[in-house]
Length: 459
Image 1 (cartoon, rainbow, N blue to C red):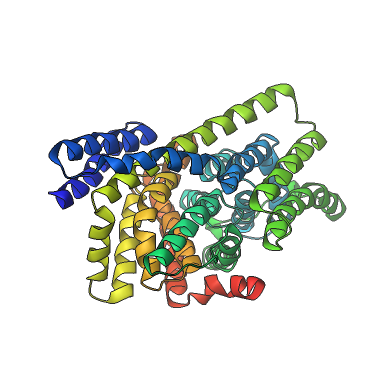
Image 2: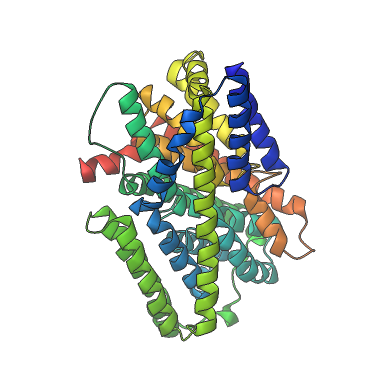
């Protein structure tokens, strides 16, 4: 009976989420409903609920999570400062003389925006509004244009400092400590956000490099699909050099300052995020975009996103508590450890489930609901925590890009003109999905892609 209720709790919650109810209240409400049913039937100990105040207090006092509103503020401020528009224009001038140059520019700007904003939806929409009309005007194939924008926009999942990696860092760290306790190990060692940031650098840059290689191959084989910018629209070298210096260097310096201070151990993610927020304000002021109306909009958006994240986290904590009270974690552990293939079989199944869940749930729900259940089990089986975190991030990035339910496809469909069909978008992302799967396979085969840099830097 207890095992049945644990399974039914998960399925019921998933059904409520698919019905469109608010995520935080779906998680918390489903958990309380099943806790009441379990208490009435004698299959759930109400004493588990006594831990709720401590869970909420621990969540709200977690210094790492303070980095979330700061990174969101930084990203929204940069977005409203038209940094993306200036970067696209500059990089388009730098590479525009080459066939495929605009596609390469979009990829590089997508990487820079990923490192500065870390918000996938905002990046895809911004790139779609700014670069898609320009690419279509210059004769780009709609499939190449939309595929490049969608793929570049999802780089915010893996390129640090990513909000996804910040949240994963907190959850993976807690799972690592739980796995050690389950094994009777009492060690102060943990997994930091800096570990995940370092671990994501090589896979992230490999991914960007392969995107660019694909565009170059298309430009060599079918140059008519990715034509260069006409010579009369290009700027002279001196003017272009000044534009590169004034437009490209400031945001790159901000990214280096924020990310470098974290990786060097000079600042915590929260401290670095606060520096990034101040830097974003300075950039907005220097571009004469900063005003009271803009500040109100940025603060409102930051508050909405932060409230959403923390409410989901509280609801997910309640769900995980009740799920554990029904013995759900034991059921999942027994199932994963009994799979054929050992660690490989368990990891393969978890990655497949996360990939499918990525069609229907945002990364926040998946991170807070599913990862705390499966991560301690996989870590107990000997999986490296940094490698696991990067595999999850890259896997979800692939899911958000995959038809027919990929979130990035919906974001672009919302801003793309009617002349571009949904099938153009679906077919355009297919080569990039292949690249994603290739990098995911390389990372699965060579875990050192994710673990080498953290081992070198932090020993």
